[in-house]
Image (cartoon, rainbow, N blue to C red):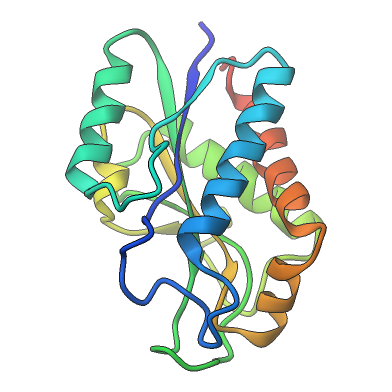
Length: 191
């Protein structure tokens, strides 16, 4: 049976510290653009999807999880939470690259999707300098990954790495990152 893709674009305008050290990139704005672009690609391909957060405001995690749970009562769904990573506490650092995440208790559909997204990012040379587990993704007990359906969180590069930031500010980043997610979701939406 087809799954509905629920797209969560993470943090909001008021979330403190979610910006590049030089202020040129704000996570809330970037992930909303990425989410909208991905949703348009999915819709054009006939894949049912919904943006969980349409507001610019910071919607609390509990409410985002509640929205996902509410949507999942209408049939099978998959949640995807989009973020941009940071590691250097307000300065530029060395960590770089794309990553996908699942919860420690994730089921096979979530793990398969996370592995596929990570593989698509690697194919495009966005792997970075950290080493995930053997399947290519990380595990963490993030709240959004404990929702009512298979869930994957992606960190779309590091906004506090100068090379990743240059990539994120480039004209092709939104399209390329949306395409990575789209290809993996399209392959798994009908599992």
